[in-house]
Length: 457
Ligand code: ARG
Image (tube, rainbow, N blue to C red; front, side, top):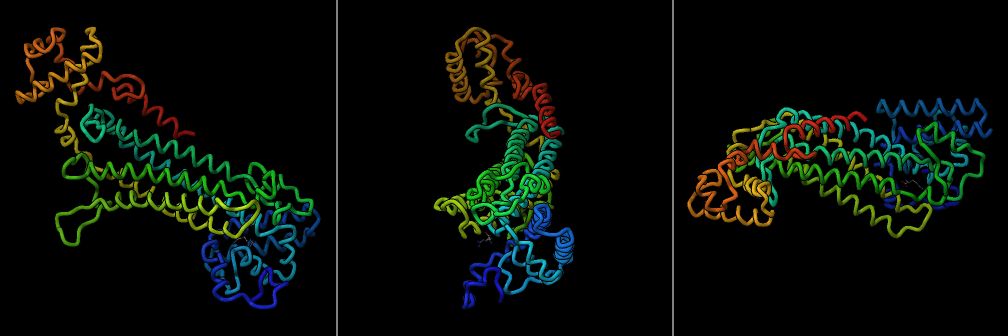
């Protein structure tokens, strides 16, 4: 087999080494980006008078044919194709003849792969953003539909204070808003053009890199050619954004798994998003959510694995960098399914308000009495202590806080009048938290509006 670099070699590569070295098995998915980069490069070469206009057009038309072969599933990878760059160039030369061999003038696979991969990551970011936006919409719709539906709020997974379904669900909206900002930042970091860096020292031809960058949708060019061919920060940042997004999906999954259990029963999953058991006929399992939770592990693994790959590398290109593609592709593929699956699951979720109401016991209102006492002038610490006593007395008598009589309250503290009953309700507890970001109806309306506004960007 003829290799791009075969000139100085007399013996063939060992078969196993060829397999070990080759990246075509996975970088074939960069074919569109490789062809986009090559078309722009052919134009840049013509701009520098290294190709005649006719040669440029022949090469560009040839590349368009290669692209069509990929699109139609007709491109046939040959045993000697080491990577996507050699495969495209080999086929181009077959189609247009020796002029195809001029395309690689002034370019190296080192700046080529860095360019292809950055382009791919930019496009992947766009797709993740679209998925994230759709998932956010599904959360907004569910939140808006039950904005003020009361449910217990938890800390330490213990009953804490009443909140609402809308409030709880919006708590999962904002992490995704931050994920979108992170993905946008990764896109920006990726959109710096390495092409023109050559193998490491910069191309020896007068290529207009700024024009090349603009043509390919990059906002600027890399300032140092050695850094240009080795910088994979954008890939690491992509993996971090993916891992943290995976963690957010995992936390949402975990909570929905709990909420859909018989013990909580706050929601039920639609049949389309659950699976059955092969042995227990009654089972409806939240496999979708469990898989989403589980897959966050591999996303984290991709990030840590890739950082380990990078840590010992000198500047400029080393083959270790070929290990950048698979984790990034897999992270993307994982989220490319997990995100729309989660959106569908949220859209088909059934809420069980009666099950939420059944858990709204009076203990959730203890803070209300303490706050009442504060409004009567008691220091909060003292108020907290007094209510603690009331809870204990109630427990001894088998009474909930809401069942204590005005006389009981008077005995506990002379500061507590009959009107305490007014604060000891779930609606009162919700309404009291009118601070921005709080669980009161008006605050939730404002939060919903804010959430919708962030979607408009
Ligand atoms: N397949 C290689 C990669 O993914 C392309 C660059 C090869 N460069 C080289 N000098 N062998 O990194």
